[in-house]
Image (tube, rainbow, N blue to C red):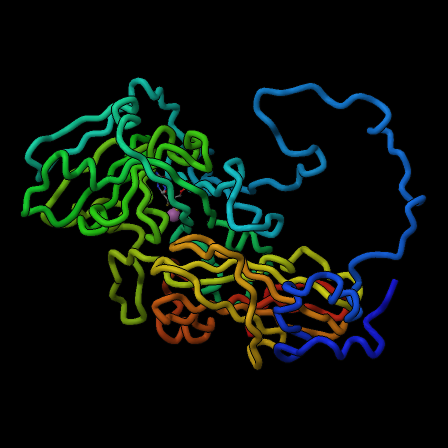
Length: 426
Ligand SMILES: Nc1nc2c(c(=O)[nH]1)N[C@H]1C(S)=C(S)[C@@H](COP(=O)(O)O)O[C@H]1N2
Ligand SMILES: [Mo]
């Protein structure tokens, strides 16, 4: 195996300190990486390929609904639930084991306040009422006759990353720290079409959205958002919504805090003012240092995190690595992600996977030649409004340490000489 030595290593432009390599490496390909002393492969000759047992016998028969390889059984959600309430809690996405920008449906995170209802779609109804000219009720069949559209959007729980408000860095992996985050292509009917059919009373300024679960979870949102880009989502990555994600229909308010993405949607009521439900008074408010709380903090601010490497994923020998991660913003598109290998002293520009969509997870990648020495890896996103992800210190200076929601500061992973990756504050 070639090591990280030799004159060819000078061929690649340094992008930033401690080994970050110019992102154009990915455009010139692996060959350039190998020339630069990357350890991607071993020299081989064709006769090294042996005929394995699976080539000597016919393969498995067909199945109705496909499942991942049995070798991928570690790629799973991990959950915590309330005592005596197994359906109340959250199951987190294994972001450290996925790539690309879309979350497979079976791994979409799940946050449920009182379990997953077993809804018979033929009995489910969506009611639109309140300040409308004509209250309307829709069956799933009726909704299926409206024009539909698809959009890719992330959902992030407002509590995601909440442990980073704590005084000391929690020794947890990425899934435990930031796994209340997923992204899917959602297909359904624009809520504005249904509201227009019902006829919006000019006095209406807000909506109330209510779910058909035993928590009766409900939230208020501005009517302007409902008329702009809200979707009554019926499909998730091409198939019907999963029961845990709102089957047979959920509200999608792109870019807004996860709690507003009301699952098992059964009722939209148009109102003059917010309804002040339990879910927006006793919860999902942000306690500020002066003891006051911010209410109705809707969009998710721009945030990014490195998914590979991350705690639990060991670095092997020194050499060339691809750092990868996710960036997103509830205010629009991700336009720039920078990566640092020296704890924020210097930054190099990461490559963004295209298309970088509005209010969707955006995959970034960066080349790094790890010297084998200590490093602190960070990522920092800028969105199309010019908003730059704050450092953890900046965020806390601003918000204090009492908040638990909307943590979007920079996450830092320390890499030790032994290749171990650890959550630190830098
Ligand atoms: N009806 C209903 N809708 C709900 C919830 C719920 O418990 N009941 N949880 C909310 C919360 S807190 C979040 S973060 C998102 C999570 O969506 P997901 O479970 O599809 O990932 O759904 C929201 N919608
Ligand atoms: Mo949430």
